[in-house]
Image (cartoon, rainbow, N blue to C red; front, side, top):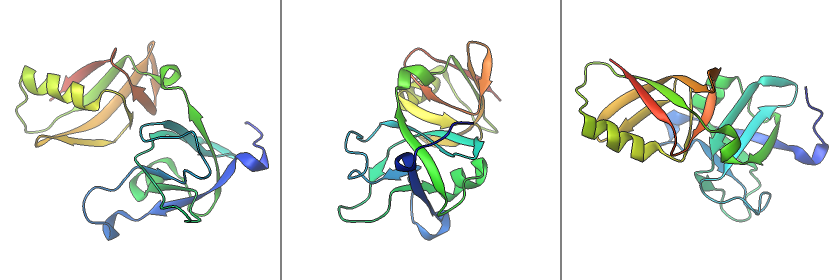
Length: 170
């Protein structure tokens, strides 16, 4: 277990999915607190006393200037990883090259997918963060992340770079 300095701890807010029309952003941060962060930056977030809550997420948006919010994740992610609202979390930016994936296992049900669709799907999700049980939707194709491996070890979340390989399971 890591000992976090007080200045590394931030208050976590959780966005309820049912109150927001459209897509809910996985991660929203306060750019005044993280001035070097930009959209697409990868963050590691977890409760310092519970390392099993650790998740990697990409910044999708920023709080409006002057807002006191620090970090916000979607309800789906919070429930999946056991993150608790208004509790302190450790958050730090990580280098995507250190958390990149080799293979991704995707589950597809009752849909036809040709090689062109597979290729477009891979292009769409390159340079993004994914986690086990994340639902992906692109061009009407729905998939669920099943397993993520890096050098034969399995991980609950990881960054997809341009050197990965998808494994499709129907």
